[in-house]
Image 1 (cartoon, helix red, strand yellow):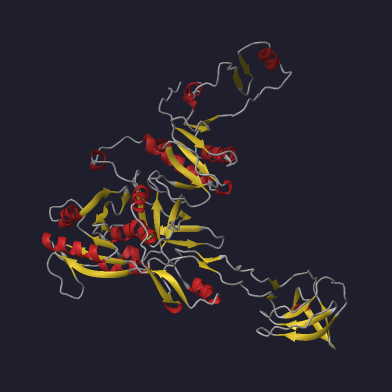
Image 2 (image 1 turned 90 degrees about the vertical axis):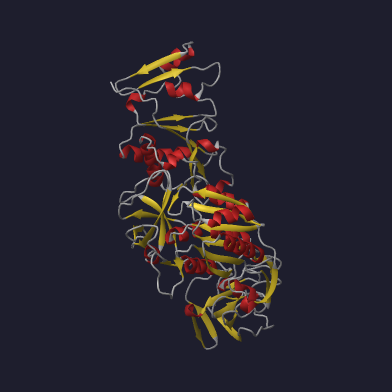
Length: 586
């Protein structure tokens, strides 16, 4: 007989009523079976239930007073137990399962019990995440993006949830290997680090009044309230004929005039009459329906219609797009083409915007050299400053380029202090590890309150964040790819927060078209190229070698591939997250 496994994986599912726990499990179980997993399910019921049928022998025996009844047949057996003294504990119920035949136990309910859990979230319910102890929460499966300190799974993609469970089982079964990571202080997850950063930041409050023509890329400082209806009058959505739609049974309508856009008519149109009308023209009195020109035939001053009619068709009501007094553009919105066009349609000649954030940027290290010079022995050209400057400017900030700071304690301290006094945020790359020549660390500890973090991610594990005299500071890794990834995951959300803008990662699900290496327990960001086939399915491949110093891997990519900590190595056909880079890098 196979020995019982006391460490048999147990995963609970916690959710509000109506989220669809049972439906999800009903779909998940055959998927896990297909992958060779044998499992049991323990379900909690909030009400009395009876699985036996009244009148059957077993039901009669139980009702006669037997506290336990064991029913057996050639195909299954059931053990019915009465519990007059209260609900048994989860551990007691789990002990009744025969673990010798199982690979996994799934538990529905029991959300307060200390077992690993996946929480389910359905936005349509309008409820927060179910209350689960943080130390028990493995992941959240949701149908909308959420910012979390644990992996986020797509609620409606059963294979992706099964992938997570399968990887979790494999990771739990793998023997622990001693390494520098296990011997050093605990690392922060990407979400935990980001959450700590965003909690420490506040929007800047400097406002400017700017002409509409120079507002592109700036952030609106206050709600723009519509001073009028848009459209301002009920008008035609088509070139055609306007009629009174209260009676649609006429064989033909008498044409009595024409209404052009910008030329309103006061002539009332009676039942049985029609006017030619252009797109955007105000409806004259009596007209509430427009028939598009392609569905009409006009002969000898009368028009007939060649398609079925419906009263009110092809008409745009006054205020249909935007009602007077409504919020036209919310504060914190970055103003792009659509927003500027909308503001212009409301008659706005200028807008109140946030003054652009000023970001001080520098690289550090005697080994770093500016492009355009002959490369010294042992030196490298400074690529990070140019990459980070472009990323920051695309985020709508003004960059103050401080160049390259040498490995000199006094010079670094003075430059940091001046940058913090003149700018809204200070950003550096290099000099945030624990090497003997990392003078930035000593300068930061002298000037402000700085945390040096190790993040559960690759590339980009070392990160410094804190305040210099109240000004936020980011110290990014010196490796070029690590600097880019850290900017996108931490600095970009911070810039949004300081501009009063919300931020959510833009992520899509794609199937890996090749195997991808990753170590369980950390988030891996690979550079990739995703494509969409004729059926709309997304697939993704890497750009090749993924070293953190290979900047060409970023230049060739159109996305970052995110491999979750619980996944480990990805096999071809498995689902991964991709972060499109469109609009961020170019």
